[in-house]
Amino acid sequence: MPFKITITEDADRQFRALPVRDRRILEAAILSRLQHQPATPTKAIKRLRPNPLAEFELRAGDLRALYNVEDDEIVLLIVGRKVGNKLIVEGEEFHGHQDHPSKPPGNGPEEDAG
Image (cartoon, rainbow, N blue to C red; front, side):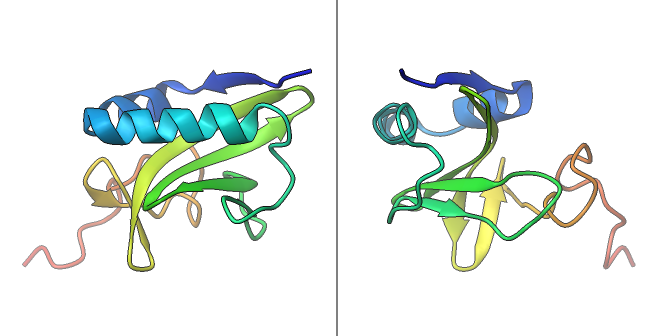
């Protein structure tokens, strides 16, 4: 039985901010790789180190989708692009997995405001 895929409002907004070509690539990866065995590690699916946000990462080239598996449902939480060792979400480096999960990226204190 295929898993139900749910996308959060944040992830939906992040997904729609991607270029159309990238959206198609990521959508195809989500549908082909996550519907039947979303928690089985592969080259495209990685279990993340314990963090308060997401348990798994789907890789499609440099695109990433962070998600959790809850019973028979996949919950997509974050959509972004990997650049080097950084995850870029909506044009900004994402640190939400290190902070409180409800804190949106980029809303921390300014580092070099002066």
